[in-house]
Length: 117
Image (cartoon, rainbow, N blue to C red; front, side, top):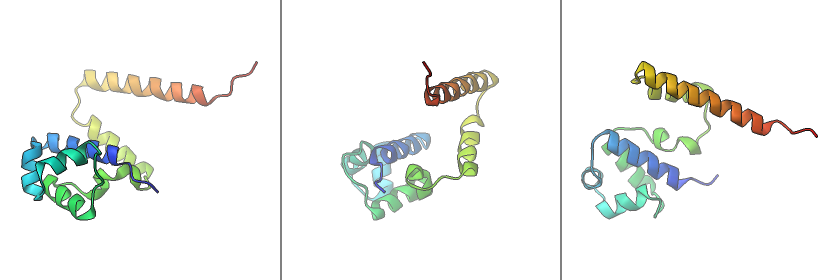
């Protein structure tokens, strides 16, 4: 199994921004250089296990949160992620997000349906 360093970097960046941290502050908390943080977030370098642990500790997240596409997902785990995303939405945001999700689901299923002549 190959790790998707681009997605890991995106998740690290999103977790950093959610905590209101700059790359420099994350670097300081993780005891790595700001350049290394930038390279990790942009998938310019592979992330070592010690670096991953340091970043997880600095961001106060678990490794599975950052590696979720590399780990087998259970339906319950994914539904929990959906619940977290939707938990702070307004009614209008929920309506729009559900409409988009429903349209996307229909488009995906339509694409999988064989076309008959």
